[in-house]
Image 1 (tube, rainbow, N blue to C red):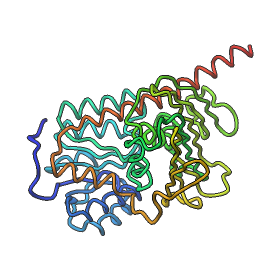
Image 2 (spheres, rainbow, N blue to C red; image 1 turned 135 degrees about the vertical axis):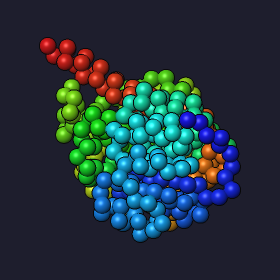
Image 3 (tube, one colour; image 1 turned 90 degrees about the horizontal axis):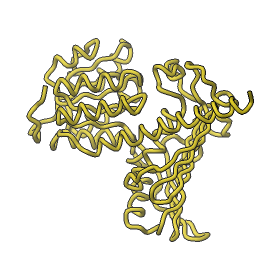
Length: 349
């Protein structure tokens, strides 16, 4: 079903599917803009529903996606387990409803591509919560790169180590999650690098994946908890990526996105192990100058940007095609590691 999408003269009527911590936070951020009206909320947990209802007391509390789509919605926000993202998003798009979804949009590139094709066919907006793009730190670095103030960028170093790892069992089931730390954390890093550089082609990918200190096995139920990968871009730049769950990092997490060029460098780094506070610096030789500092309320900006775009137009945005590019890189990281393991096994026979 295709709607006649045009600018709205009223708040967008939005449903919310999944209102755990992150889903509720994104809902609250959207509601605070006045651009969105929470029409209905669904979550399998009565406790989560009741907490969300305090933020949206006029919203109907329903049981599932079918009941949500029975309302006349302009948009749907999805914050459910990864295995459900693509199927739920396509169902909403086919019903004429724009979607904002948690990452990853799909467990593999073919799922992401199917979602993007559904959005294109329905001519409806699709967004994903790639929230680190919206930190002030990365905005400043993106501006430097766009203005070519760092010269020819040849090296990008990306890190996301989480000292805890996910607390939901489905993250550790590959059929449900699509993978381990790469698809959970690496997706942010890959997106940051490609987005900051205006999505150049990725020429080659090499990778090594580990689980509990040893190379990842072929067991279908096993997911990686440590990963390193190297991407070579068409620009000639080389991206080095490392991400992990439960690393002995000496702090809650390490998050770093550093860009080095012939005329200088720039880096976004988290502050004292924080998941939420970031600084950005520009480097010239041995001199470092600040670009951005905390506090910075960035967590809901991807959600509010989608809400603003929904109200202003709501039509398909070709930028969604970059979601497929990121998913393809993740597929290549997994495939390359599998090929390397097979080659190693043959060598040792």
